Length: 272
Image (cartoon, rainbow, N blue to C red; front, top):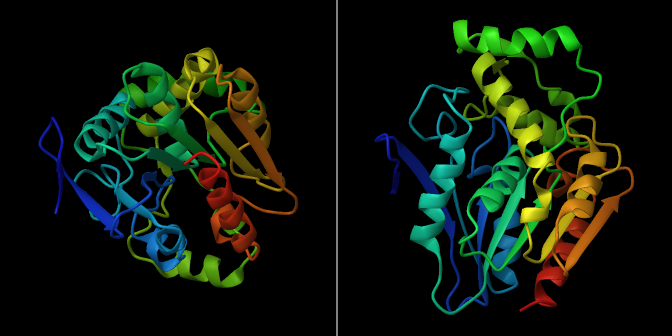
């Protein structure tokens, strides 16, 4: 069960459905992880208990999907995969919600900017990776496109995996999960991500649907300031920004996850 991309890759699909749902969420996971991880952290089931169905998929090169692990040729491949799946999954008569985390947030942002005819009624962002690192050395920015072109599959940058959550059980399970890519970010993918961050930063105003942006104040993986910039930049009349004090990157996997999930479900419920 899955989706076939325009370049003939199979993308693995996961879904958690309820009878007569109030809404459907299309969930985009973060860098290195996969959609099935949102079952064992109970997020999908929490939405189910609120009467909301959830569908998701593993990005190309990740989880149970086809493609070289940890690699993409162009960032737009990720947004085009999303466009294809959104069209296939859009419901006829109930709200359609785009929920994204981390890298998924960057994919969602660029997709919403580039696809004005998207089928979504609202979008929710968890720790969106929309702001590049200001401390990045200028020399790296100059050589990044060269390395990306000459050695696209070269492992280049390491994710701070010990900073995903304060919960030791979450960190332990992350490290032992064979479907999570824990290697270095490959050169082409890293470069494409940086370029997409710069692309969306200049175009936030193109987003005009109701949005909720959430971020942990103590996130050391994606910059919390990026969420403020996204919130300020979109032209949506209905927009909300929520910072959670003391939380790390994966706000749905923190000890305070119930607070985060309840806040999200309440926000959705107010708009159904």
